[in-house]
Image (cartoon, rainbow, N blue to C red; front, side, top):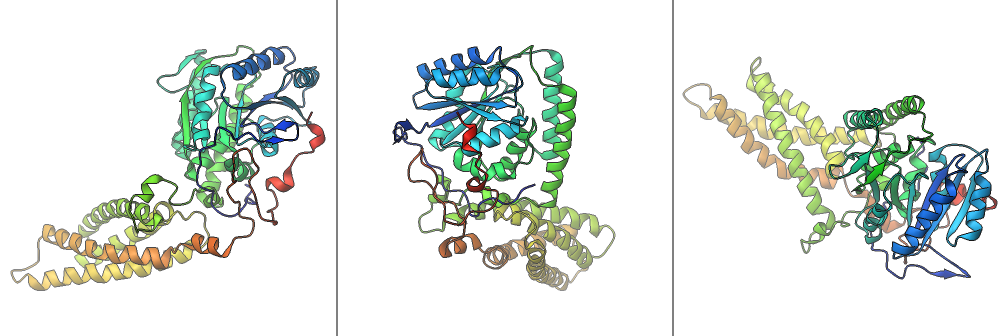
Length: 465
């Protein structure tokens, strides 16, 4: 997995203005760039591109471009693509010498200057009326990516039972193995904002059919917002997809991505939006923008950790004394609590400083142990009639944990997980991407670029016609 992506969080989402198109010479920057990956499609390419172009010209209220990405075709596809680029305004042909849908999308999207990037299959199996609803959340700034779904309840799909079974089985594998929440990974109908693509695409390793799935899984794990659009879809009986070989490669991709996520080797924090991007973070006046969200996350994690702790204490108490049961339950739950707060409350990902964070979490655990053990000792001393009841022990432990919660949150926020990102922003981080001042213009970057970013991976412009 590649990790050489630009530093810094993504800028806050902004609505792309209606007058986002800016003239540069005689050309104009499109707001939407629709890529059509093709391989040996000389028979259907022209009719499909003309149909898409006519639909966009009639219904799409912004400027657009259609890019035909030729995946090393061996028939007359390049000739047809060049003819369309010469006769239709807003159509360009892009020739690649290697096959692979993922390779084509990464190459064309990395070279595009449009603020919103999309792609669809050349057979146009998806009803084109879903295109504007697909890109609207990206234009408005509501979402980072958008995907068409054939498995939504309101979708209308015409295809055979074999493909239906394979599609549902594949998405079930994704949900069970990678905890994916999107419903349809392989629908050839997706869109992404360009500033997100610039960070996300260098992390996507696959160059074939698994490219879509890997991109969506990484985006979801990074906390990016993915918008799903129910689509009407008619299966293409002349599809070139080889089901068995594609399924095998997809399963290999699932294993590879799952292993990388489990090992924490991906710098997904570079894809996160800044705290305060959500309007809910700005409702509390005079409170730092990150505090409200962190409090909510800490409370949720704390409530679940308390339930987990009490369950462990009850199990351990059946075999040992109250002090030993309390210490063991608190130790296990503290490790889980630190890991959960690290990832969910304070947004720290990867293995960097993970051991140090757990060690600091154990110090916080020791403070909680002193409070809870001291409470149990005080309860035992106050019970003149003998050993206190199990219910009394639980009640005292709950009160002691509530008292330790405030101290734990303050220590986690100020000591274990300080906001280093804000400090880096104040000092200026090399290679950090700065939000563009207007839609349709390239995002400004500092003079330094990170190897593997768009600046040093731009394709040869001689391939573009």
